[in-house]
Image (cartoon, rainbow, N blue to C red; front, side):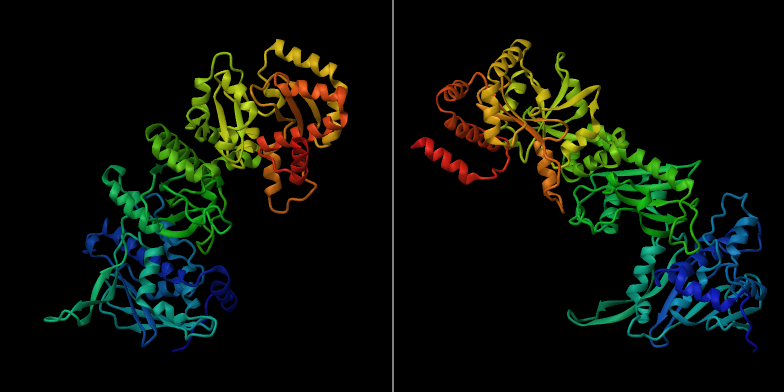
Length: 627
């Protein structure tokens, strides 16, 4: 029979189909199964208005089989089938979609939800097949036809025998090469995995002969193989069921199996939306961070489905970075997909969906904080840093979303407290939210300035993560209260009388204090203070960059000597005996005063958790004083 040429510039276009549009060869099976589902949909839709179609919905099925010897994969359905003209138009014309035409003709009918749109999915099969045959018979007709092609050179159509209605597609798989192992697609387990991955929620059963083993009779050791027809897909997505009909155990099993976690999720989130963007979402907040979560290798994103067919394994655009820990699926028929159905066009619906999902996640996390504090604190131990980075990133644009989700350990029993809880418990006269930063709670509690704040009965937030202070700087205020670092000059809680006393003393001792500053060489100033209780000295930062922030910057990759440095002052407790000692030395032994100044500075560094630049010098000075 004479071979017909494809309509359109076939060689060029078909080559593009095979080598450019699709990035993963494995999706050919998804496309063929989706086409089969569409064909069944069309016949089922016809049966609703045509009494001559005598087939119940429960009898529809898609069948798969593979023959390793013949190197063939067969996909068959009992759908509407195609006439000769339809084979000519739908398969002989690249990018002609019968499903699209059917959907357009019936767009006013809500029940119509076919998957195909572009008419190119069928040709993805040429990525793995050297030849394709399509045998098809329309329901209610006697004549069947076979379409056959080996690629861009053209195709043939002729009559054939076919006892059942519907369509049967046979792919003759290419031989393996050094670069490509096409035989993988003939493997039973590989086919099952692809169906589970892409087509698990096709609404008709996908059946396949599966090889199994059983014990031979009268034997406890020998097994025999047998074949059983098995349904490979789940059909009804869990997210399409009413939440009240799904048990906690079902949600747990779905999550642990799909996302390979050994622990039940901390929170299950269900969401259905209709209107501007119609979609269903089933989301999970993990109970712990995956081993690679805080690495560059981790990829965020939700599994994206269109009408039950998986389009993307990780759609990153549906999740903001600060909620990247959320796992789950989103299913929508409203998405604008590109021609390969592998990539989303960035349209308004996608943005609307992402915004609604973000709002829902925040709401559910807030509920978890109020309803199950213990579980939320465990969650925060794993993912709290990510929320803090969310506030710090993008110049604080997302602080309104995240600020009420933050927790910090505090001076009140070292327990977690939210910013709202802190603000609600503030004393009437308190004008700021106080915090202290350090490598650990133990080191924070050694800070000299902490004593004075706690003596006032004020609660202090303990910041132990590198990002903490940067995040609070982005927040600026909470409940109209500024954040103040207890080690900053602005956090001095001395009375006006005490401050005046220190000011007078600093003025009268200006020459001595300048001499000490010159001896140290690393501080902005040396001064007396009345803000300390028992400690003799402390380092106080001035400006936006604190000592702890400087330490964080130094730890960053690529840090060099050009990094900004914190401006610090050495403060000496005016009420400590050391104050009188240095005054005496200034009068009697200025050289010894210089040595005292260096010792006091190093002491303040040690108390403040700052590494000493020259510990040997300090040891010599102490030894000299001891002798």
